[in-house]
Length: 259
Figure (cartoon, helix red, strand yellow):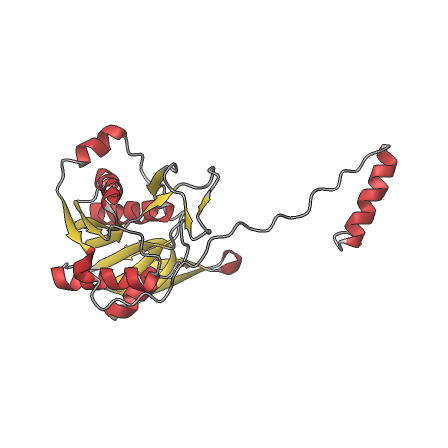
C-alpha cells in the first residue's frame, strides 16, 4: 500500500508569548521555535506501521517554505521512503488554497497512491478542513477523526472514528481514500537527532508551488490578529475560616454552582 502523508511545519506557541506587529495584521514569528504539527506525527506513524505490515511505501509531502524541509527529514527518520516539498515561500492561510495546490500537485506530477493521510487539524490555523476539501476535489471517500485502523485490504480499509461521549464508529472505506488521523491513534516513535541527520541524505524533491497555484482563489484573508479580552480579576476572600466559607458558599449560590 502506497500512502501519502501531508505534514506541516508550525510555530510552537504553547509556552511562548505572541507579539503582534504593526496594526495587528501579522504575528512576530522570528523568535518562535518551530516543530512538526502534532497531529501529523500520528499520521506519519500510522502510515509507517501499515506499510511495515503490508508492504509499499510512505511518502511525506509538505506545503510551505524552504524551512519545511525539516519536517520531511523527520518523517523520513520515522520510516517514510522519501519526501516532497511544495515550496510556496509563504503560509497559505486559506484551506481551500492549500487543498487546491495539493490537488494540482498530485495531478500534474502524476503521484500514485492508495491512501492519503492528513492530521485532523493543524496547530496554527485549526481549520481542520484541508483533508476533507482535498478528498472532495479528488472525488474520493473521506473520513475524519480516525482513532484506529483495524484492517487494510487492497480494496478497502476498516477504520474507527471518534465520536462524542466516548463512542466510536467502525466504518469500511473504499481505497483509494483520504483519512484525517486523530491524536492518540498510536504512540509516535522517538526520533533521534542522529536519525534526522541520516534522513537528510535521502532525496527530497522540491517543487515550486507557483506552478500549482494557477486558478487558486484565496477566499479567506487574515485581516487582523487580536488578543482575547482580559477577564475580571479573582476575588480574594479574607478573614476567619467560618466567614470565608460563608462568603464562598454565597458566591457559589449566586453563580448557580451550588443549590
